[in-house]
Image (spheres, one colour):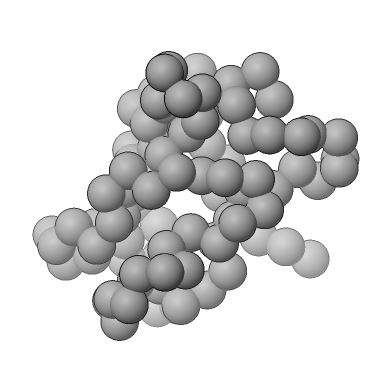
Length: 91
């Protein structure tokens, strides 16, 4: 069974804390109206680790960022129904 982050896209920016692999992270999800995608910013111990990383369908968050403080777990935008073709506001 997969765990998921339930983001309320009606209340953007959506800011929350979550415990991942034993550490607490602060996260903020925003929406980029020009490009039609959501972004995520991640903090750990008041240090910004990731700034407005696009949440692209099926791609891992922060995969190309070599910061050891980023949570080393699989975080990605997914469509459990398999019907979405992109990660825009309408989908």
